[in-house]
Length: 442
Image 1 (cartoon, rainbow, N blue to C red):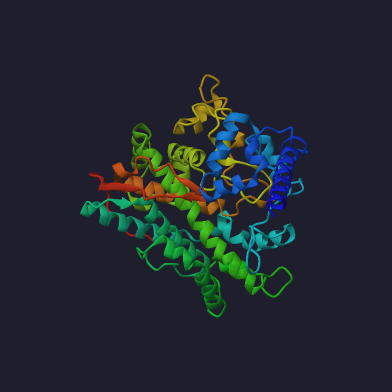
Image 2: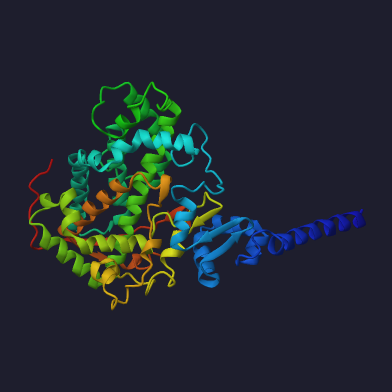
């Protein structure tokens, strides 16, 4: 019996070793550099993902191996600008994907090309610049609520978890934009994990409620999804529920993450914080002057700060659903693409840095910077995300002086599970001495 077990074990070990050698040296991708142990033994890759380290490992591999890395037996990641067009661009067939599975129905992220185009058509009007402009009063109301809550912290001297409050604000806002009612009802300060755990059932219930209500005509996301109801391009009930669910998560979590990132990096970079605060306060006499159009026209340095936060803290660091991808975290933090890549320097995005050959940032590879992706599957919510984060950041900087609490100094050291696992971003807020009073909005 012992001999049989030993022989079986030896055969199994030999098979594993031979498979590993074949995968490393005789695979069609064997010419691409990468970590050999991870390529040979995919289990190590899965363990890294479970620990929240995979995206951080990918960044270190690109530092070691260069622009193109074989990150698994049949997976390759890039950090070049051309790769965006080759992998995701219009006119290119989709490269092999590992689809993210949904239990019921389909959503815009995991759909095949035909269904994706149908979903995108159904949602395009609501996410257009014109569609969002029509919702400015609604967006402003929720930002007013956020500022009011933060004022409570400033007046009592308590530290605020800015990441949590950004999440609460964006969750309620996207819920109202999507369905005509907030997701968590007036910033209920409960657990974010509890809030997310109830998200799927809430989305389903709200879709059914909206289908039976008279709220049509609001110009919101549900209006947009229902406009083709009854024809061949219409969405089924399952598809409405699935897309409602991903809209709430994608439309809130990524925006809140970026706002948290820019807040952290500004508070760790006093010169940039002082400069952007002065710009915002000089541009607007009162909070009510901070509108969709004005934040874009009057605040070039603040927009540069947001781009720099996107670079250092992309809300979705990598694309775990694809065999071949551009890894954003690695691309944006690589000295191959950006001068002083590990530092928060908003000036790299200003016109003088882009146009002046004498600027140390003139040669930055800005074409690799695509936080909303490119091609037919680029982020449909780009206009909404930019609008929210610009207005919220401007309102926060206009109203408050902020200070990072000591326990959050290393906030950037986080794990990644598709998105960042954010720890509390504790900040002390004080009211600015020369503030104007909010006169009432929409």
